[in-house]
Structure formats: C-alpha cells, structure tokens
Figure 1 (cartoon, helix red, strand yellow):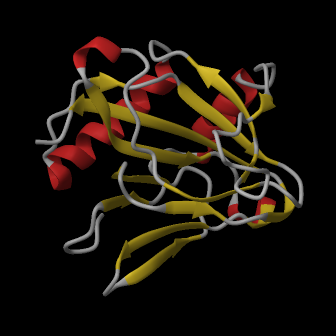
Figure 2: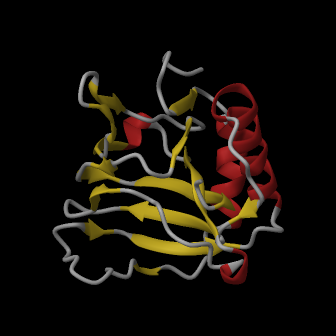
Length: 188
C-alpha cells in the first residue's frame, strides 16, 4: 500500500508474528556490535546495535520479495541485487535511536559496476507494545511533510533510498528490525 505520489510503500503485516519469532530465535546468537558512526556523526545521530545476515539467507530472500513487489507496484526502478548484507538492528535502551539521514551510498558488493542503493526496506520484528518511542519517521516532501509509523511486528516499509528518515529514541523496551538496501545503476 502506498500513498499517492509518495516514494514509500508500506506493507502492514508483511509477515506473520510467528515468522518474526522464528527469525528472532534464529538470530539470538548473532554477533551484535555498536553501529559504527560515519565521519562527522556522533552518538547524537546514531546509537544502535547491529549484526549482519548474509544475502543468501532465507530471510534476505523474503525481504527481496517485498522489495520487488514494491518496485513492480510503485517505483519501477532499474534494480540489480542487494547492495550489502541485511542489517539486524536492535534499539534497546533510552538512548537508542537513529537521527535524520538518507541511505544513498555506493554498493559494497559491486563497487566496480557503479551501482548505488536505490530502495531501502525496514521490517519490524517487535510488537508495537514491546517498546515506547522508536517511531519510524520519513520526510515525504515540503508540501506533505512527515509521515509517522509506529511499526508493529511484521510491518514493512520500502522507500526510495534518497528519502530522509529516522527512528526516534526508544524510551523503554526493545525494538528489533531488519534493514536492507537494493542497488541498481546510478541515476541518469
């Protein structure tokens, strides 16, 4: 489902909570690390823990399906493949957040092919009642402003990687999500 003229595609309940539970169970031993901060960023910009899931894992295949559906139904971008591994993201304290940013970047997997991130996906694995705060916000445009989502378990949002977005501070509880980026040829 998308809002007319928007550059994002929201799929409420893209996966059943039982599937989310299987993913959480399979990833419980994933090696988490503090998210690296890019040049010029501080913990004021980002404070999350992350791990990585290979793109040949079944979870990545399921997420690629959602990307392709959104692309066929809304975006019609020239896409090639995953840009990077899928990120397993944990917001689990009152300082966990990710400030305003966009996802545009060169593909880590295909640097010689001049591929860039074109579509981003965020898939929530937590029940909305498991956390307070942690709202996903995306700037639509100057006229329509910001769109807010309190994501529930299994909700997915696919959006153009050039859109500015953030995850507000999680004030209590734990919010877990999967994030990925699909790449294609540079914009013409």
